[in-house]
Length: 346
Image (cartoon, rainbow, N blue to C red):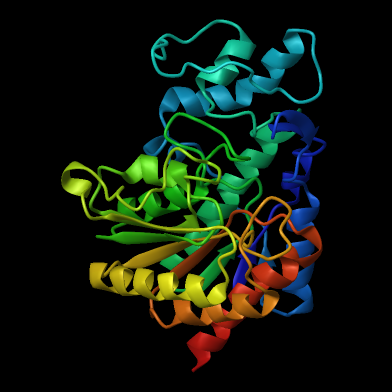
């Protein structure tokens, strides 16, 4: 399996985030991608390729153009206001407040285009976000052109980014971008299977009224876990999209025996949908030692996930999302991929 990776991700570094009532160093840091890349090499998964550059047309197919245009302006505007460090919003247009008029100050604009304080912007953030987007589209093209599967080693991740908002370490929704790109390239149907611990709220929001892109999430129950405000089991889509959004919320302490039952059911629903291709949002923050998660999967479980996905027999693009137990992230993420390769070989 080929991997696409860009060293430009490293520019998104030294961030601070707002979490649990404190401003703390960001959990989403460059070492995540570097450890995974090293594991890809040590496991001899396959060649590691540099991304091809892409314009932002594909991003604007799933995100509002004004939001995409805003992202590269954030840090220049932050510096122009006399500040350095992490640009983080502190106010948001919630219910009862106006969210239809773009404010003129960068602080207010950050809140206008964000749903939390977990997507900080530093000087190298946009370059990293753009490279992550390029990685996803380059890997998607490999699969379209005949590869059974490919791995987009994206950083920053993307599945919390909605059509006009960032949050949860995410800025451009790479999984959504490539799913739409497959449709634009001629696929009749595409499925997105999100196995990250946290619900892919952005992906759900983008495609909630669509029947040509199925979205399936296995995640922690939003009644008790971030991102809290989407991901309940009764959210099944709306309009023509009704029935094409599936959520499997699970409680704290969920281990693989329970989690795998949800995966099996999700896979049966995916096969019934009969997509031409699938995108897997790979999050390994389901791991028992993850510092910001509460599931109990072990390193031995991740190859099983890959083998189960391989049994679907579909062209598959793996897009990296979360996972913050940095010492084990390479073993776990690449474990999914090697398990997939073993499953294909059977």
